[in-house]
Amino acid sequence: MSIRKIPHPDSGLILRDAARRVDLSSRRSFLRHALGLGALTMLTGCDVVDGQSAEQMLSKVSDFNDRVQAWLLNPQRLAPEYPESMITRPFPFNSFYTPNSADKAPRIDPADWLLNVTGKVENTQDWTLERLSSLPQFTQITRHVCIEGWSAIGKFTGIRFSDFLRAVGADLNAKYVTFRCDDHYVTSIDMASALHPQTQLTLGFDGGVLPREHGFPLKLRIPTKLGFKNPKHIGEIEIGDEFTGGFWETYGYNWFSGL
Amino acid sequence: MAHSKPVHPAIVRLTHWVNAAAIMVMIASGLAIHNAHPTLPFAVPPAMTFGLGFIGGLRWHFAAMWVLAANFILMMLYGLASGRFRRKFLPLAPAEVLQTLGDALRGKLAHADLSAYNGVQKLFYMGVLAAIALAILSGLAIWKPVQLQIFTLAFGDFDRARLVHFCAMAAIFLFLLVHVAMALLTPRTIAAMIRGR
Image (cartoon, rainbow over all chains, first blue to last red; front, side):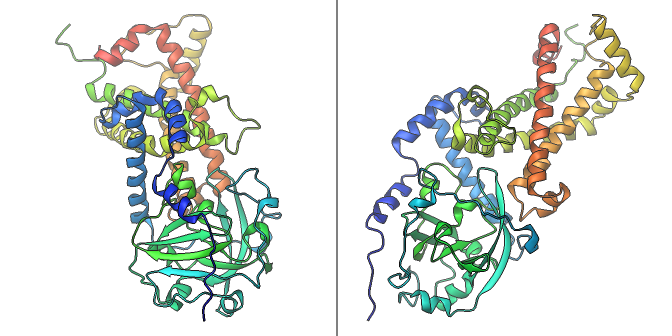
C-alpha cells in the first residue's frame, strides 16, 4: 500500500507560471528598462520596433545559449574538488523567497516525509527517508557558484543521482528531470547533466545531516550548474520529455545555466 | 581626393562601431550584474546600468557577448592579416610616448595626419585590444568554471578570474573616457571613422 501525499497544493499553478516564461507585470517592467538598448538589436538584424521584439530576441538568444551549453557539456569532466581546509564556513544561505531568511524555510518532519517519483519511470513507489538513506552514498567538496557572482565551497554527502535514476528504472533517454519542492520551488535539468557522476541527491552536509536552511531532508547538488539549479527540500522528481522550466527561469534566468 | 585611399577601410569602420555598441552594452549590463554582489564596496548608480536591473543585465550580457566576441575576432584577424596593426602601432618606443605626453601637457595636441598615430595612441589602442581580449578570456573563465576550468585555473581561481574580469572592464571604461574626449576634441577623426576619410 503506497500513500500518495499531496505535496504541493499549488505546484500546478507554479508550473503554469513557469510555462508562461515571463509574467506580464515583470515583462512590462523589463521592457521599460530594456528600451534604451534598442540600438544594439540593430546589430542582430532583427526588425526591432518595440521592446517586445527585443525581449523575444533575448529569449531566442537564451534558447541558443541552452543549445551551446548542452554541446559544451562534457559528461565526464568533473568539477574541481577542494581540500577540507577550503570549506566555506558558515556556508551562505540564499532563498528564492523574500525576505532572504532561513526562518521561512519549511519545517519537515522526517517521519512524515515521502519522495514522489513520477513520469517516465518503471517504479513510482514513494521513498521514505529511511529507504533512501540505505542507498550507497559518496561525499564531494565542490564550489557552489551563485548567479549573483558569489561562490562558496561546501561538503555534500548523498546518493549518486544516476544510481537513483537507475534504481527507479527511469527512462534515461528522456529529456528532462523536474524537481518540485516542499517550499514550492520548481526547476528542471537536462538528462545529460542529471547523469553526470557528481550530480547528487544530497542527504548530508559538512559531516552532519543536511540542515533545514540548506534543504532538509533532501536537496540536489549539481556542481556543473549554477546554484539556483540546486533545489532544496525536494518532494517530487519527475522524468519526462516535456519542457517544464522552473521558478527563476520564468523570470528570465537562462534555463541550462551550466558551469 | 575622392579616389584617394580611405584612412580607415570599410571593415575597420564597421568593426569599430559594432565593437563600440557591444562594449557599451557589455559594460552597462555587466554593471547591472555586478550590483547583485558588488566587487566594489558599493553598487554603481542605476544610470550606469541603463536601468537594466539584474535579470535584464544577465539577458543582455549573455546576448551581446556573442556580438562582442565575433566582432573582436574579425577585427583581430583583419588587423593582423592585413598588416594594419603592424603598420599603425609599431614601432613603439617609450621615448615616443613621453614625447606625446609632453606635447599634450604643453597644450600642443596635434593630429594633422589621421593615418598616423602618436606614441600614446599606439599604446592606448594596443592596450584596449589587450583589455578586451582579457575581458573575453576572464569572462569565459567565470561563465564556464567547470567545462573551461583551464581558463579559470589560468587566472588562479573563480574569484580571481571575476576580479580580473572587473579590472579588464575598468581598463576599457577608462580608455573609453579618454578616447571619446579626444575624438570630440578633433571631430575630423569621427568623420573619418564614419566616412573613411
